[in-house]
Length: 330
Image 1 (tube, rainbow, N blue to C red):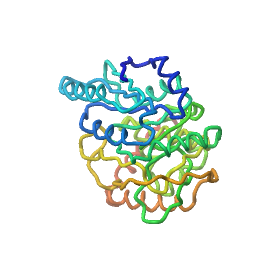
Image 2 (cartoon, rainbow, N blue to C red):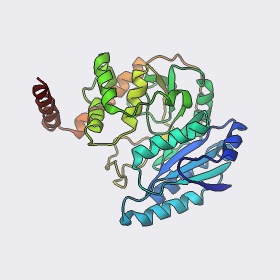
Image 3 (tube, helix red, strand yellow):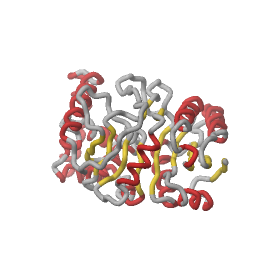
Image 4 (spheres, rainbow, N blue to C red):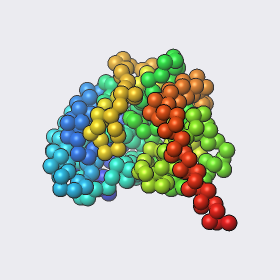
């Protein structure tokens, strides 16, 4: 069953359908990559629980005339999606951009439902992704210490626990509840101020200076429009945790140069787990083992992307800008 809906409305019959089901609705965001969306849908429909899940596909509007053809083809792929309990396609009349599309789309779904599973059009899922997501959503539904469930784990070298928690939130194949999304603060400047005042900026950066705080600064200064860094910061400041799997249940195949915001790299490549994950309750505490493994990966990756001298240039520029502002205010 497929239906269409304008941005800002979830059909009431679909809300009632999900309330009668044990499976959370899925929000899938796409733009102008029909082949990517087709691949994502192909993996998702092979999931256990797909036939019982309501799928909302949000397709952004074109930025310009050059994008119209691919946006139309993407909407066609979305409209032909099948194998789910129902499919609702939301077509934006104008271009919102990924950040606004995700923020508004997730907020819209959570106005109607108490929880949601979120994907973008370049996330390939394990056949057991939906099982993990729905089981974890149920397990931690009433735990205010938990912000979200995540399905991707960095390709670290150290062994990780079967599942574990880390402070904050994440963005590649994730799920959350209405109660947690209410902590989301879209104001990057306010988030940065609060992080500095908290004295936890180093913890926010996993001990690798600037690895995430630079992304937030860039968002504030208009060099990126990341919703994900603001989601991470919002949950982190609220003292909330995200559940991760020890083996990734998703793979982001979008680093092929086709995306609006991503380049081309194999750094984040993961082999997805092809067997069920044994999900058991674990203590909602920051995992020291996982944090250390993530630190090694993030700092090594940062060094690979930015040679030592080159990495100093943007930091020096930022310090000079902040110094100029300070001098003007005196």
